[in-house]
Length: 391
Image (cartoon, rainbow, N blue to C red):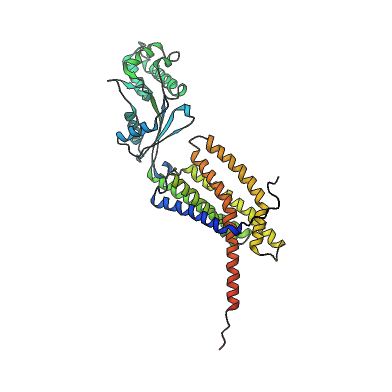
């Protein structure tokens, strides 16, 4: 299947337009990384505390952010995830301690910030741990148990948590939701010591600064190793200039992709790095297809100029490029639109990278080959024109 037959587009004749386009976006990205948003590292790389919260209603991000600021939790990053009806929010705090105490501290800060109109002497059942519920039941003893009270009330406390977390997603709207699973006497006693808030903190994660720094280093090394391996591979398969052109092209793609994340102030996480490494392979594959056709045509069109051979090769592979890139782009676009918040960074990197990677295979890699060839010809002419000195 071909979209284009016998095309004769002068791509090299438009190389200065391509260069201007690349310079504008590359410089804008670099300026953003240096002076504006810098590189917006995610919690994977900079360290911090992630608190996962489930609400009984649709959360208001602005109200949550204002509450965080009021409580002294400045620069907290709030984002919804999962399906909208799940009412789940991820709160990113700049708390970088790695102890067990820090986990409890991050959870307690969020709970204290979000709880409103707390009844005196009562505990929030939506955020109460197993031991708190069990101890309350032991003291209250609503079932009037004897020697096996410890085991029985542990089971009842666990049943309450199962209904709250597994059946209702972490938030109880009414004590009546416990009926049918928890003993009626226990359900009847709970309002005396507990109240129900409209949210539940169901998970807390911490990434320490040392771990974040190590992950940054490993991500950089992975990118550099992939570029070096590509340079060696293309140097053996073609010539070293082909490898240099491919590496410059991929560096160009990576720079624009990371710059776009900085300009948009989107966090760069481990999944984004995975997407960038995927793009390195994708862009390299697209470039190799063009290079392979150039090498074949050089053998068939020995008397033609390299610029004409390169133009012909790009036109011959244009249909394949559009089909491959177009289908891949539609796939990652669907992933970006419908994949949810968790995959948003990954899919955004792929959307940007596929567009830039396809463009650069034509507009960056090929002109580098022609520029190098023109430079070699000019050097050869200069060497021939130099007068020979005689004594």
